[in-house]
Length: 432
Image 1 (cartoon, one colour):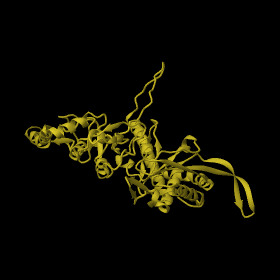
Image 2: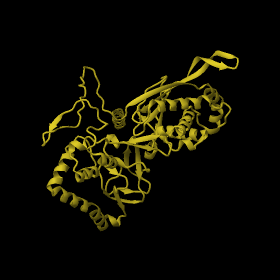
Image 3: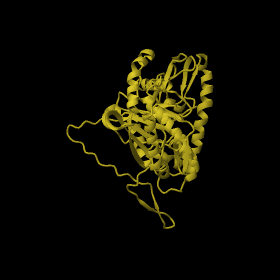
Image 4: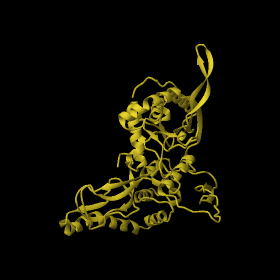
């Protein structure tokens, strides 16, 4: 699954108990964030037992299925299954029989928010009530609280009255035993939506739900500020026009602007490493690697962000090949789960849709994102040794949105200016 993937959701079992399966034959379909994948069988044999149901969220490393030979389908199956499953059932029964624990389990189960058994167990051990558990921001699939989320919450428990991931729209007060007033979790007043004659109602697909929740969470978490710079990219346009045909003939693929933009961003990050960070409470995590995500629009209209790992270590040829490979597999739903994880900075190209600029939303837990606009011919003042003159230049706006908790205007503005400088200084005689 990759180092950064902690859990996956079982979408569909392709085999049922008693079916025969060949080695490398797909057994089930899983989903991690926005990527759906098929899991192949590691060996040939018979499906002896399916240990999880469709829709279950399973931690990476868990056994999900037992596969054995025909001989093992009898007595051996009973032995393996009893060793693996029955102790868990007995342990669950014992814990539920204890009065205090049973109340905690019941309160969690009644929540509209999904919690994995592991998170519920940690909450029980730490005495976290349902109302408090519901306030913990989640970074997992569809905003779910993961093990790391709840463990990170524990040291700061009780220090913050309201979580930063929730808007302070409306609050209720409750009286505690000593007569003091304590604020409960904030409540969001959602607008009522009326349905008129002729309106069509469609359900969001799974990916759109994930995107919606992630975007709302990002706006609630980070105070967004956006700085704008206009860059003269004439040299880049002329160079690409000169090189694209021979590159496509030689490599069998297109030469786009995206790898050039990523190269400039990677260089600027090395100059301003405090843009390549994440925030954990009051701690700032400075990322060692420069992993740049590139937002890609899918045919379905949804958005996915494959990540170019260690982008600063690649030359322009390597970036071009990697960008094309990830973009093609993204459009064909062939990305691996690990390929959309671990990003430290994101680039999005709003110019693809003819937009000159945009105000992008930060891809949490990153602290900044850059949007590049459409390249347009414009009259511009050109400084020469003989004086200023007017000429036609290829211009592009850069929109840099950043988290004002840790990136101030000086840093955010200087960074996007440095990206523009690298683009404007592009060597028109370089080779690829």
